Each structure stands twice: as C-alpha cells, then as structure tokens.
Length: 378
Image (cartoon, rainbow, N blue to C red):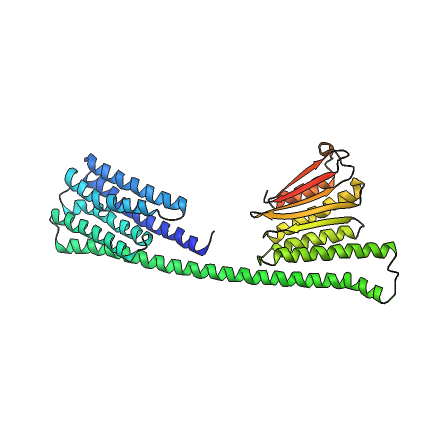
C-alpha cells in the first residue's frame, strides 16, 4: 500500500482524474449533440483526451504529477483549445464553447496540487481566467455566465489545494504513527532477546561456572572442557550479534540472530562443533526467521547423520536487504543429483525456503564436503 503520503498522492491523482473525466464526458455529449458534423470539434476533443491521458497516465505510473506535463495541459487544454474551437469549428455561441471552457477547471485543479509556489499557482489561475473572460466575451456571453465560469476555475483550484493539504497532513500523521509503532515493536523485540539471552546465560555459562567454583566437578575432564568450549563459543557469538545489531534498532534483526542461535545451540547439544559468524543481519519477518532457523537445523542434522565430520560452519550476512545464510561442512560430501525424495534436505530445507519466498542451493560432490546456501528473498 505504500506510506501515508503515497496513499494521499494516489487518492489525489484519482480524484483529479475523475474530475477531468467528467469534463471530457460533457464535451463528448456536446459534440455528439450539436457539433458531430464539424471535424475540428472532434479534433479539439481528441487533443483534450490525449493531454489527459498523458498527464494522468504519467502521474499514475510515477506516483505523482510531472510539473512540465501539467504546465502543458494548462496551456493546451485550458488556453489554446478554446480559441481553436472558436476560430475553426464554427463555435460562436456561449453554450457551444462552454464544454471547452469547462476543461480549464480541471486544469487548474491539477496545477494547484502540483505547483508548490502559491504565486505561480495564482498566475495559472489568472491565465485561465483571462482565457475564459476573452473567450466568452468573443461569443457575446453575459457577465453572469462569465462570472460563473470564472468562479468554477477559481473554486476548482482552491478546493483541490485544500483537499491536497488535508490529505498530505493526514498522510504525514499516519507515517509518524507507523514509525512510532515500529520503534516500539523494535524495542519490545530487543527486550525479549535480552531476556532470552539472560536465561540462556543463567542455564549455561553461569551454571557451569557455579558448579566449577563449588568444586562439585573436575574442571579438567574432557566433558567439562568440551562444555566450556561450547559456552565460550556461545558468548563470542552473543557479543558479535550485539555489536552488529546495536546501531540498527529495526524490528526483526534481533529475531534472525536469536533464531539462528537456537539452531546452533541445538546442534552443539548433539556434540556438533559449530563455528558461526554473523554480520549485518537485515530486517526480516518473524516467519522468515523461523523458516531459516528450521532449515539451518535440518542442515546441521544432515551434517551429523551423513557428513562423517563433527564440525560445521555457519555464516549469516545481510547485503542490500537480502539475507544469506550458509552452512558448510568438510565431510564426505554427496552427489545432489542422486539425493532421494525422502531426504530431509529436500523437503525440510528447500520446501521451507520456498514457503517464505526464499531459495536454497546445495553444492556438494563426493569427497568435497557440502555447502548449503539459503537466500531471502529468493
């Protein structure tokens, strides 16, 4: 849907486009009823339609009006076409030229919301007003008719500007509220991550240190030394995550690191040594973080079951909004073309990444280990 300001712009484009369409419909009816045998009248109507398609088609594609096209629309549709209709289509009565003059109102509306300087907007309105005044006086219109149409040109510009001012203000307020909500959500995510890390530290590092300090176990046994090594690696990864994510309080970044860390700790509990590196993790939805962590867990499981090695390497990096997670082992490797459909690598890794709009790639050969790369978005 875009930001609040973008929504306001889209609505203003649509509103002024419908306003112009109503004027063109009046012109079509007038030409059919009274001037259908006059080719110049059809050419005038075609020129007005062409200018409208160019101005509003460009605005729809770009998201806002192009000032040069709006100026061209004012000059051609609002100022030139009425005199062309008077000079070459035989339009000599006020009622016959009214539909051409009517287009000046929608031209002034588009100019009022596009041109930022009030003095220039005023000059546009004056230019259109002079066109109306001269054109109607040439057809012998009374002051009531001239005054009514001048009022329409001025009112169109004023009302369009007021609507645009209000919509722009509301869009800015919506954007500010959205940013405030995202900041609060990011703060809650960081707080939840801190609590999770505190609990993990209490259950691992602190418990081990307390037990060793109490003399309840021999710190020199291979089991205790292995546990201390795993928990030291966890502390290093924790410090690295905090150093990378601290400058950027965006929602979702902490969730990626925490989710991947759960996969690493789960693998380490099964005696797999994991060397992990994190750098510049981008913002991703929670569902994506969950899917990535599940895919990484399955990749670790495959290392344990099939690689014939007790060491795996995990890297997670972000670049231009894309998250790339890689799991590498230096085991026996395999031929990806001969992997059966029942293997978890295909169903648990590839399928999970496809579900969230990501992609998984496997690079392996017998004797060369394996490399699994997960990318989001794919």
